[in-house]
Image (cartoon, rainbow, N blue to C red; front, side, top):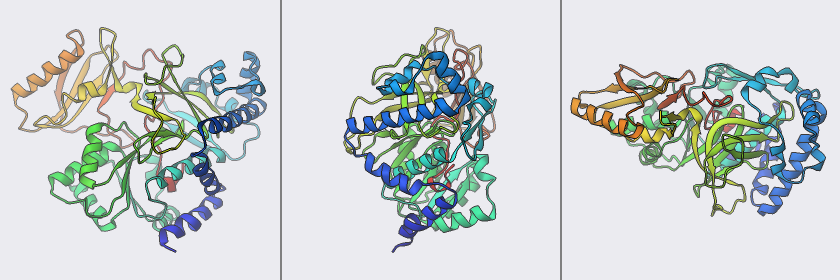
Length: 469
């Protein structure tokens, strides 16, 4: 038996059992259910939804009261679309009703918090069921790429939660499962050179991290003429931020491996992951995704809407029709891989990744990014939009950026925004990452002004599968 098989088949399941997670059995179930015919999978999901809602109606004070007020009876529900009878859950509602959202029959609950685009933390709780389902779903998605727990892995990550857990037990566990954490907070040239040496020494089968950090590392390897294609990396898992096309291209070219993007958040859970055929599959067995317009109505497949999530493994602290603040589309096409799990067409990121113009339009970050990226002399950049819609472009520049090039860039940006939206360039020495270690190209404080409460996290703000949650 290979060491990877020993880890995947014995050591990690034992590790999970000690944590009271039944993730190994559940992963096997998920690997079977993903091939069910679509109508059979839909029937399974409806059955689980009804059981979940019934349990919530009996044990969670907040929903027991809400269901009574709405006249909502879980036993009479016949389709997943019946969820639309319930109001959406926002971060503000969770903050106001934290204790009432706890199930009276819940066992041990784990306290979590996430900062949010407004900076005000959201405190919520998870039970063992939610953690187990997220671990199993991530584990299944990992195995789609011919890698498994026990294969050497490098994690380029920056969440304070993960970086403060470096105790003896976690260090021992990481050595057993052959994972190595590299902090994404400081991405200086010296530090990135050290990381490249480490990666070449470890020869990992997979990389895992933020798209921005992995793209920066790949660009540094290319500029330093350090070869990374010959060390046996099979897949690069990205999550935690919007993955832009140029980032995917750079990472794949430098590391010689496909990029598999994941989507979800610490609060909403593990929502979707990319398969080798290129589709972003929803973890449909325990996640119901709705895409809604600003009035809360469903959008057609192929049209952009806000991602609203019901997680069927959250009976201890329910997330029912939870507004993530992220924007996405549902694909019209089935995936050629044969899995019946529904497919997200495209994830555009959180609502704060959209710029608002004075004419009332919402413009995705890419429209501005294309006018700045790869321009000579632009080392780093960030767009920041204030509540009054004025935009500041922060630039870290080199001598290659000539005044006439800067003027051309400003003209092109203003043409996209319109002359009535103020735009100014400010030269800076350094652009710091977020507190989590992520880098964001666009932050708009105007985007959330008309929304109830946009969620944080964006594309999956979680950990690699062996870390769980």
